[in-house]
Length: 428
Image 1 (tube, one colour):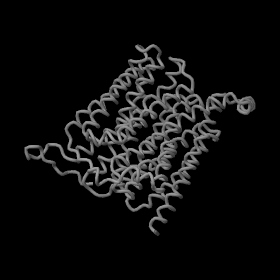
Image 2: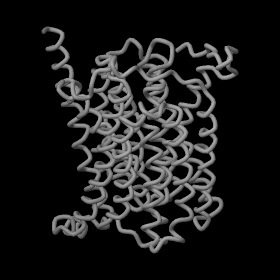
Image 3: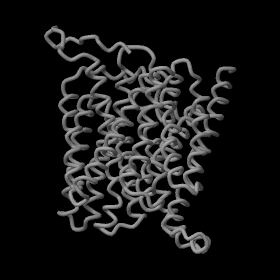
Image 4: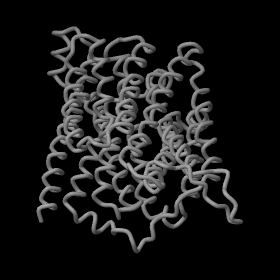
């Protein structure tokens, strides 16, 4: 994309900030979202040990995060057009920074540690939800062609952010000790705090006038768009069910040391997810996106299967990591594919799709936690534990992840339906 143009100031002079600075601020926005989504899961074992949380309560924190993002997505669909991109992006980063600080402080000052954690999660989730709705249409509105490549490149920065969070946080806990974990959220809040001031200054394209947009009501009447919403739901669930539980699964389900588990599990997951998005952003202009998404779904099924059933902990961790590559294009690919077919969709279209993506991102990990807890109380799992020597915790987590295979299966079916609907529309 050509983003080097210098917008004018109110006095007619060229601004010192160009659309390239805007793009860089968007990249940092996605890094901020990666921080709020991926820091707490690295601390789940600490939360369980320090505050006595169950698997279901841990899963409920994930549900609260993405559930709050869904509510904010719904509100933002209409709110952003009224207050403008700048006010929305600044507010989003303020919420993200405040929630991260709260993650350290609130457990000590609220009536219960869990209520404090929940409040902090909801605050930073409000910021994450606004970032999800706003950043993609801002990038889509910038001057230049090759929108699909730009979108994929943007989403790769979520992965680099996730990788940095896992790598730096894991090394910090290993070197400094888990007793100092409360320093981590305070340190990471610097990123969204910095980007608050960045978005207050960079140039932004005005939203498309409402009369030129396709109403949400019309979008929801389209079978093609409804199929795209199914893809977004499955994309969010396929990605987050694995990434949110991989750290805890490696440590308690595979009995791998935390440093090794985090580096070979969620860290490598993020690296391969980022690599997939980066390569598509640089070289993917001529690829058939629906076919790539179909192959992604099939590879994702295989990764879940190997993670659950492999007798080797290392192979399970590698399958977890390769899952990052398999889901890399699901979310940005669906956004790009849909935006190309509904060019008048506008911010509202991205908002509705973000809602469905976040519904999947909340339901997938939560369902994994619920199944993990439930499975441990079933006679089948208890008998299997006695026969194999695996603990109930191990088998419970594997049962939860096994259910996660459902989401890439539905995604593959959804891609086939999307292609069929699009061919029918072209024929008509």
